[in-house]
Length: 115
Image (cartoon, rainbow, N blue to C red; front, side, top):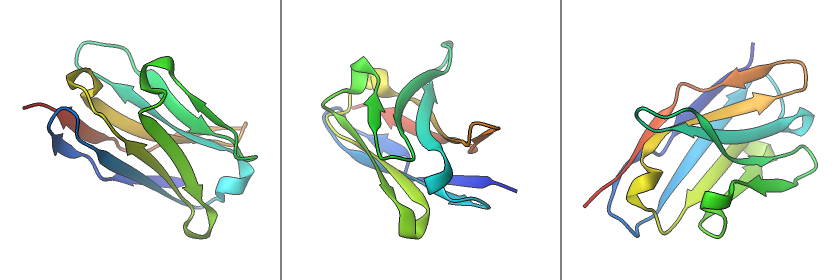
């Protein structure tokens, strides 16, 4: 049973930073792609960033240069470092793991960017 547990969300002022973590159990990150989506109120869920089993990183245009995804295999954890946050980054952030057979989701963590 694959389980994903996110942490690190919260309230931050515009221009601030947050780091999200997603710890996986029941699998190994080396076996698939792990990434993040987000969903703002009234909007569809959108992809943010992902990192493949080979370590290739892909970012949505709106977060390029501000967000960094990384992986720590020893801890089976993926991180999303978010810098220069904007009010439009406010959303529930969900991590996922895709082993090409199934896609697993975390419970989501709220990120609010507001002064």
